Every structure is written in structure tokens, then in C-alpha cells.
Image (tube, helix red, strand yellow):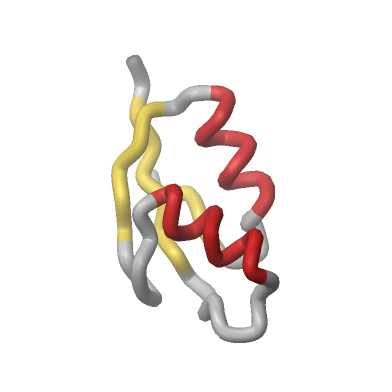
Length: 58
């Protein structure tokens, strides 16, 4: 299956608790951290939930 790289570009400080949990579930721990995940509907939904904090790296 296809994979996507997700990079955390903004700080989690000041974000609501549910968005912090979403970042943890994606595997993003700190700023400028990049993780590679499978491109599934659940992962894309999590990325959409925190789209203001992350970017998709090609």
C-alpha cells in the first residue's frame, strides 16, 4: 500500500488535548519530526484533524 510522510511544522503548545492525542497517535513527538505512515482512510482523517499543525512531505 502507498505511504505518506507527515511532518509536524507547528508546535502542539496551546492545542486542545484531542489534537495532542492525534499527534501522538500519528507518531509525531516534537517539532520538525517526520514519520512515514500507510495512506489509509483513518490516517488521512487524523491528518485532516490536525492539518494546521502538519504538512505532507513528498
